[in-house]
Image (cartoon, rainbow, N blue to C red; front, side, top):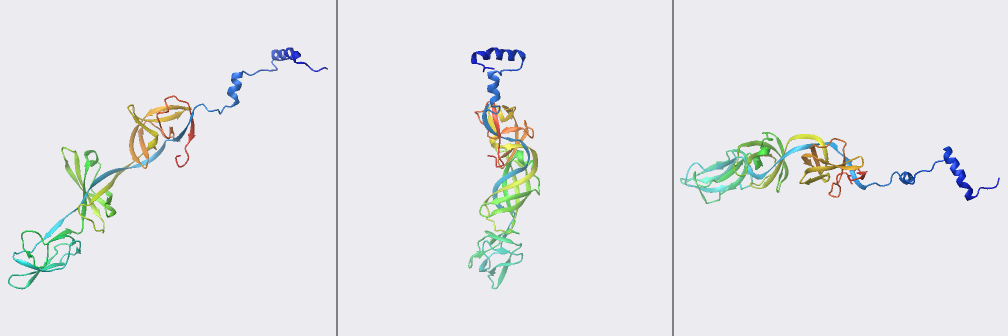
Length: 299
């Protein structure tokens, strides 16, 4: 049989098409099916909203003061300082001799510490006069106990209770332990701040009036969390951008506590929702996107 020429192909193809033995795909379908993974939107990094726990922390900033300061004076007038045994900053015990005073009629008497603690100040100097009135010879911080005294907003004072533990960072002394010792029962009318006394527990020597900041853990909250970078703040409120069916959805959310770059979401998101890791104004509601899952380090 002689080979078919080009002009002879048309009748043959027509016969096959009529018989249903040959089909010709639509050019549009062929183009779509050629690369089903072809990009259909901008690539965005996403992550899943996951549960996390946040510590509820109240911060108290203030100054270190002596919890109790005892003034030491002789019981009578007209005495002269003959000898001084201690200086400011020294630790003393109850009953320890601090100085000896000369009596006008001759002889000496001893001045003893009524309580153990730290000498915070002294005016005692050999040859100086001493008496029951006027400046004290010695001031003792009783038992070496200090308080951090600061102010907190009224919304936070309700979260605090006596004996709650605290971690205190004191300028020049590092971090020390503490405990809530006393809470004010009133607030200042203008600032609406209340006073808090946090007892400091440390063998270290602290400087009176040095600055400190206490962090008091008042509880814990567990819920859905996302990175701070996933949140947008605007006139419409607080929102995050969620990818659903390859398109951007804008969700209004309520936020709670924040820690280490993570923000608690109290409403508006569910665990497992796919969230744009770095939300931005370039993404609009309904935009098609290609979701790229963030790596373990969040990049």
